[in-house]
Length: 160
Image 1: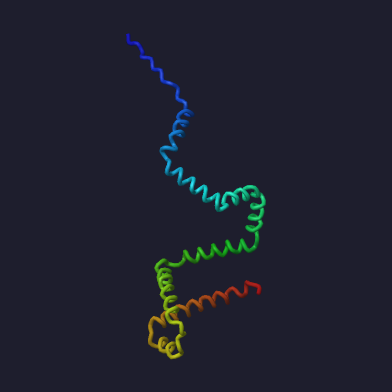
Image 2: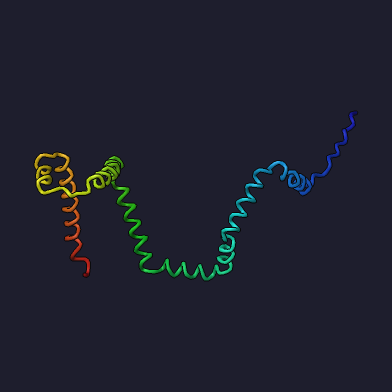
């Protein structure tokens, strides 16, 4: 009958393996370690570590100030306003917004290149014969109309 072959595996010591990896790490990662030391020294020189140490030392006071500010009426209004702005941006079609954002830099460049404001004759000429001008005026007029309508709708509900 066959005899079993004895298999004696040495016990693995993970601590010894980690120690070996740690002792080889400086040679394997010398460039990365030197870069990390440079970053640490820059942070020390600029006082970032002192700032962090101070913040950790007074964490209770910082937390108290942050909570007080977050509970203020201004902070609540700011969060609500941000939510409304996000909702408004989400309602705008990206193609429409792209048209507006691409026109903005062109308009600013034209304003800088033409430091003199347009005269009355130029404005009248543009109003009667420049289709782009009329289109822009119609868009602004529509925006003011909708804005005015919303202002009138909300007057009954809001105290002055």
